[in-house]
Amino acid sequence: MLENQSPKPYNLGDRTQKFAKRVREFVKTLPKTLANIEDSRQLVKASGSVGANYIEAEEALSKKDFAMRIKICRKEAKESRYWLELIEPAENENVERENLVKEATELTKIFGSIVEKTK
Image 1 (cartoon, rainbow, N blue to C red):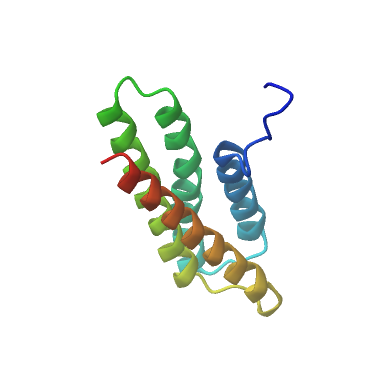
Image 2 (cartoon, rainbow, N blue to C red):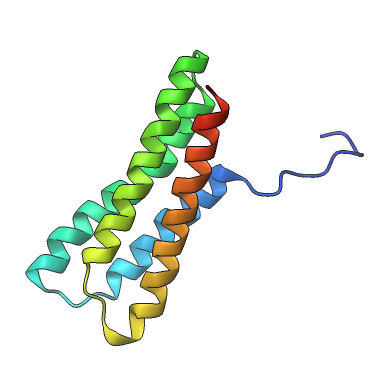
């Protein structure tokens, strides 16, 4: 990076990885009900897919490929939010769940904005 250039305001690769790690930590705190176990599996997969597909987008072979992978990122972020809203956290974990829902929503909006800019 040149000296007069400022760093990116945020790094989506790092942000999506942090989101997936936070989800994994959150899942460890959940009551072990049948529903939470099943929903947690789906949540872990979806939250990890956001970042994995972003990595794929960064290596896209074409603009069309990039747009498709970013759409998948958006879809997985939406899915993460869905599973977060279904999960029943312990009483002391409601705040973290809401923070994760907020982050999933923000990621969905960011990826949606990128999709619009690629049109």
